[in-house]
Length: 311
Image (cartoon, rainbow, N blue to C red; front, side):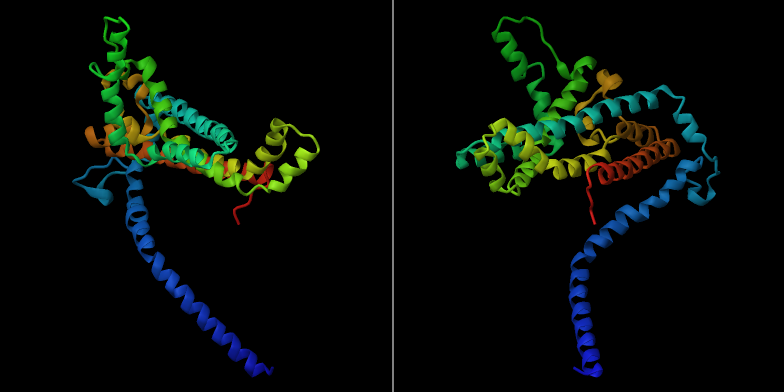
């Protein structure tokens, strides 16, 4: 083939590649537009964290105050309380939403009845799709004065009424437990999908060598799930300061604000209710920066210790 023919073939391939990529670009264009309009453009508001923002003066007329609001966040008790609550609730959720789905997936994987297995898998997965607005109302009604919880207690002879949603010492555990119940099915399905990628020949060889079921799980199944565990842990690390605004906002009240208030609800209360826009922006920016650092750190650790690579 001559050089001219080679050039013609390359040009043809180039045009075909451009045509194919153009269609793909058109397909994802709405997503790019949505990302730009609702994620990129609003980032201009970050400047409020460094201003004494006044809506009447706008971003260009409000005076600059530097790091004033960030320093203020370090001394006010409400912000410290929100940070501590966020860390406790979020870290507990991250750990339990990694361990419990893994154990559940390993147990369900041992079930031989496929119809029962798929039924259980579907049932535990369904709560993931239910909004916290709905679930919070259901939980509130169950634990309310006339709910199932107190009705059962009355049937066993209890004469008092207990409202767990208003007890600070119980509310935090209630947030963690209900979130794990709602979300563990999602990660369990991911683990079950990863289990199908482990070669059955490994289990057959181990069985021939006399390995027990526990040893097969420990030396074959769990090592085969390590990449998935690393991925889910890496993704979860970015949520260490995200304790679940929609859940907490729909479940907490003034009686449990001491143990239930998190950074997101604090930002909402300060920014929307009290209209302290600069302070709320500073708190939100602090959370975003820390989350970004945690995501980068978790990826570096995954790359270094688990040989996990995205690209």
